[in-house]
Length: 184
Image 1 (tube, rainbow, N blue to C red):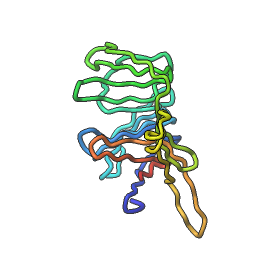
Image 2: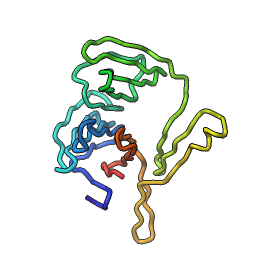
Image 3: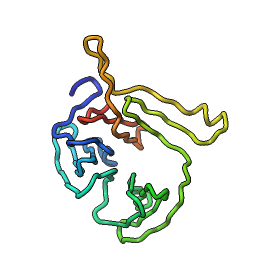
């Protein structure tokens, strides 16, 4: 542990982190995908890597549950989520579609075109912003941005890029990740 709310995990990925996901059942496990072609499962309290799966190319996202290939998109898949309430895997792709999958069979349960509606973004300057595409003043008042991943030592501020963001669906919070896997 490096601070009151920071953890530096052992055996971090060797390249940029593309996604982090907390286990839906416990905060003990953290799944991490990386541009180094790996997916790693960490036991956070024990500060240890439990599993590592090596792919042939960069891994852009990860999710708990998937045990087999459920389907494909026409472009790389950027995000993956499992919805246990309805037993559906949801994937979002750079082909501008969201697809629903039944993980028990390789069956596409629906495809939805997504022509740029909204986003949360992070930057190499250690910033995170929530943006809304609805131009109405009421909706635009909801957007915000903040600085993170900064360390000041000897009056010199080090700024680290935000590599991934993970939202916690129960506590309505999120974590940002920088290279070296320091959670804030």
